[in-house]
Length: 445
Image (cartoon, rainbow, N blue to C red; front, side, top):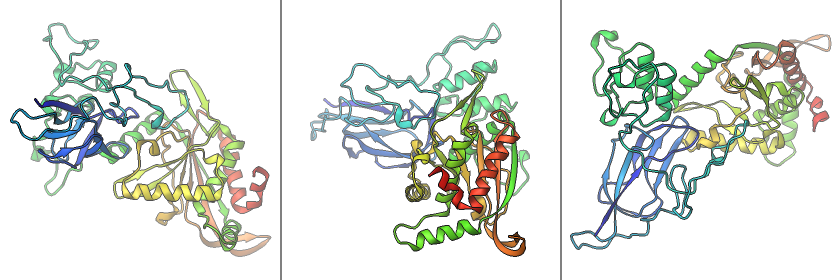
């Protein structure tokens, strides 16, 4: 007798509560092996192929491509074992769970699920380990009453799965029973709560927008996936961080000559971004206040003893910020190789959540877009970002004479809670000195 097992969308790590189905990799009726990828989903962090921990025949799929599902919602059902019709036996090797572990489900050898306690420092998603299958999440779980709910409200389950949604409603004294969910089977999503808090009545996604709500000829672009994550993060940064920006022009002629000399000596080519990153890590060693984050709950500034350096990368899917782990411990050649690897993965959509989280400082080379300057928004929850404009020939006074030099504008946007202008100015001046005289870096090598 075949046993039908339901596989739910697992927890993909880093607090992600939903994912959008991009592409199904199997059809109903297909035979799948243990740990075979069955669907490709897009989270707010990256594109992820989700493997199924069971081996058998796919009997059902839940959700069309483009559908957004919450963590814990059913993905597929798999028939394991011999079918009742007497047909060929379906392999049952996956009935007890696979050997691979993806956050949210895994082997059944250990009796308990374990999570590593996070420290104050950002850590990669791989720091979360799971040793047993996650408990099944009911499609419509009951939730505790929200504080401030008027008396007389009907009792019964509220269609909410995400604890983030419940917390958001609770913190804003919002009665979830008054909302109409836009998810599968009326499931209440985070967007429904946010719409209600903005005063907009949540609407079913299938319901067309009223014609009067937008001029004729306009179109609506959903803020979801990477674009939605960027919008949320930038809005939070502007809301929470009192930022300030300072900038300076620097003569990059000697830096460009030094790079040319390095690349003429043979071996792997050194990128300009790698040299700028090396300068950043040296500057952060002198001004550690800028390699930090603010813990609002504890009213403390948390300074890090490592530099996980993020860099802005524009892709077809939008702006992403891959993170170079332990950038302070890498030389120019190692930084060049890691930048190249992450950039290629960004363009191919192969970045993992671990590649996109845990940064402590961001380097933004917007000069590649042909612009001189910018006042970037800090990559929350970091405390600072260095921006680099295009390097171009300009008139410059060099050794008392007017000359044409390679000039770049450097800008530093910083969280004014972690330091004052003197620290920010000192950091930026040191960066500019290293750009103008790369030999300054020799003191820290």
